[in-house]
Length: 63
Image 1 (cartoon, rainbow, N blue to C red):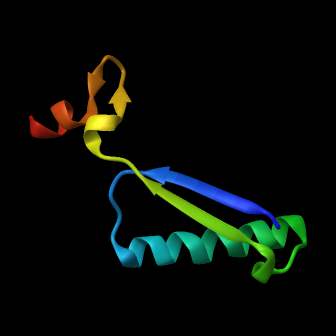
Image 2 (cartoon, rainbow, N blue to C red):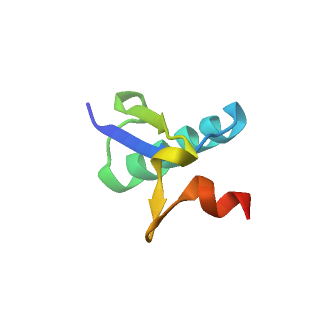
């Protein structure tokens, strides 16, 4: 059972569905494993929990 894990900021339900569909489709093609065998886990992170460079992403997006 292959597992695809995606970490991102907040996503809409539509974005999550598209990620699952496209990532699994491509991974299935590359690995020659049926799409039904894949599990996809999406972890959403608040901007306060993401740093870029020396700043929190929440600080950068307020400017």
